[in-house]
Image (tube, rainbow, N blue to C red; front, top):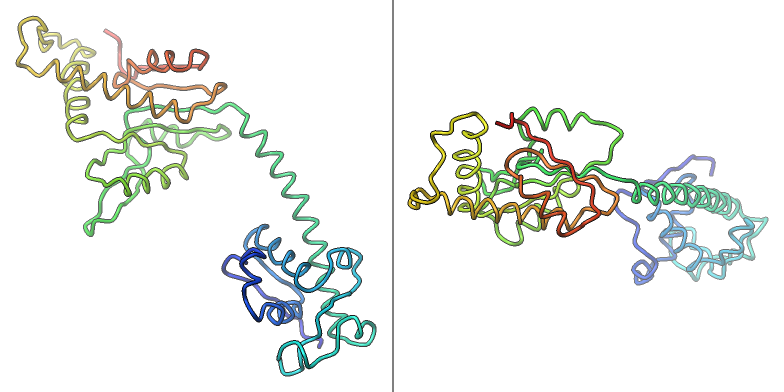
Amino acid sequence: PRLRIGWFLHTPFPSLEVFRTLPMRKEILSGLLAADLLGFHIYDYSRHFLHACTQLMGSELSLESRGIAWDMPLPAAGGGGGGGGAGVGDAVGGSASVAREGSVIGQIVALNRQLRERQAAYLDRLWLAQRAPRVVVVANRLPVRVQRGDNGELLYSISPGGMVSALLGVRGMRMIWVGWAEIDDTTAAEREQIRRTLWRRGCVPVFLTKEEARLHYAGFCNDVLWPLFHYVVSRMPDIKTDLRSGFHAQWEAYQAVNGHFAAAVARVARPNDLVWVHDYHLMLLPGLLRARQPRLRIGWVLHKALP
């Protein structure tokens, strides 16, 4: 009787609607209530347990007052079920096990009260955080790289680059990053999986086809804009005569990709956010976003010298 006993659940404790389908639910609760300390992963699991106790084994009012008024009989000494023992109400004041269970119930009620207060404080902070302005970083690449492993699995790693290293070190600022996922051989289910995984890391992927990526990044960005911004004007195509150069297809892809980015940003940007667009890959994006959300705050920075 004097042994100190603790119990910790390594999985979620189910809700009352699920737990009450277990035939031996009361026996299991009685066994758990013999412990001095009960541990759960998060607040909701402890709330589920407390709800099961109050609904299946007694009234919540009695628990709040730390009285014991259960309608079920105590389990038999050998760990059996209901019929062999004395009722809890009959055993008040005379059973050490009942007193011990009552003490644990009192601790659970006190813990539940503390958890409710903490949850209320957390919800207050969450309410304020959700309304606080965020910075939506929009760049050609995401800070998280998605690749396919040798066995076909999806692998995630930190992308290389100075911009990623610099912004990942920023603290005290809520930041969402929108960028190209850099993986194209995916199914619809895999794209949804990538979206969920990256969203947990504060990232929103933009998926491009191989042709879009080639014409946009390797084509218009690197064949036209990059040379221009480095004063290599001899490589500029003549749009009137050089129709076979692929320039028109590259320009169309540049417009289409900027449109994909605009749609992705519009899905996550809120009116009080600051959208921060980066570099020459997305020079059409500010105008596309302004057309969609006229009051959105938009910034753009060029990482190269403007010629």
